[in-house]
Length: 99
Length: 494
Image 1: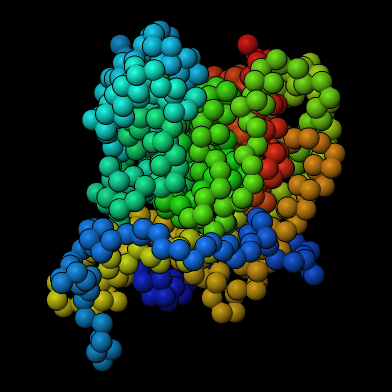
Image 2: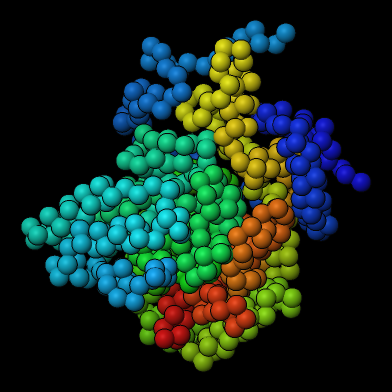
């Protein structure tokens, strides 16, 4: 019956970078299955040939004069960082993490 | 005994326009007005919990600056200079934490002010503090806040609505005469309806989103809320306008909303065509709300308006389209919260990779509703599902916009109830996300089309004795029509 299984949610959680507990996976699977079943109603709408709308107004690239304006200083940008060293963000190990 | 609705006497009982008049004529000072509202917050907010942060010193300093300038004979910086305001904690401020009611941003200090914040400061409006909301504005009851629920001043066991329940409760409790909300699917209008206040979602692109923490970028819009239509209009004019820092900001003149509100105050609606949306006049909704709605329609006719029924068949599909498009945009927008540059970082003990730390931080920092929407969005955007869900929802979005266009060929404004019921009990819908989503079905279509709408107080429901709102909707960039009709409706109820 359930279209969206616990395993499917585990896959989505991995893609979304969410380390969910087993309880969460089970709970979300049931809820998301019900929500998706509901929003699938869009598929019953006859919309063949209708242009999809991604935004309320037609967007054009807005251009500005190519002049220097003040932006955040390094100090401001780093102010709320969890870890900082030598004016840079410190992050956990990135390379060599895949066995 | 403390009463939690707006006091009947004293400075906290007055409208923003009345307070501004008294401050600008030097009958009272901005400091006195600001202090009175800070006192009211101190008296009531332990119970209401409208505020996540109160910035008394900063607010009083801003008030003193206004007083000093007026004492020197300078003209007020704006029509509302000196009148204090409550700011939804989704807009950044450099002098107070911005949390989005999430553990992810607990204590976070933004390096810059949102454009709305900047405009408020330039207008001489003291900011009392930051108000509670559903985490990252995802929810309909303010129960998804990581910092506790906000209570409805009209019934403390009930929700003030959401996501902007904090701002609306602050107005309804007399804690602030003005507030800022944000509206992605109804988060300004719906809480306004539940708290007997006025809330406006301006036309998409007319109020800058710079510094408004994004949930769904094609839907989000900040807007004004207050207890009267005129106060809301005065605030609207201050925050609206083009901003080069927001690429979706529209470069055109702000609609004359204050003039429209004053026009409306005459109460005359002769020559105005009001479209009654067939899809939202339903049996099965709360009888007290529907009775109130039908009485509101009758009142509009008595004031000279002509009612025309309008058929918007795709409004019935708005909920499904919204709860695909919104989570899709959320899953993309909230990817920025990764625990690397700011916000919560969890599990960084040397044994976890950067990617693991991101996953642990996001799992710890986000609450259940935010996680649900990220997962649903990720699902609907996945290879193999994209066309069937996201793209199809966008086609339905076009059909909804076309329904509006056709309806506005027959009517100047459209009306519906703002909500299908009055305020529900806290805890009543928290275990059933779909039931919670359904509460917003009247307000969602407008955001999908990018148009403007207002909820204006319409009295109370006969069965629950709780506040009801009338929703008024107008075409893009015709925000003044909301104030013309809303102002007249408000005058007609006096």
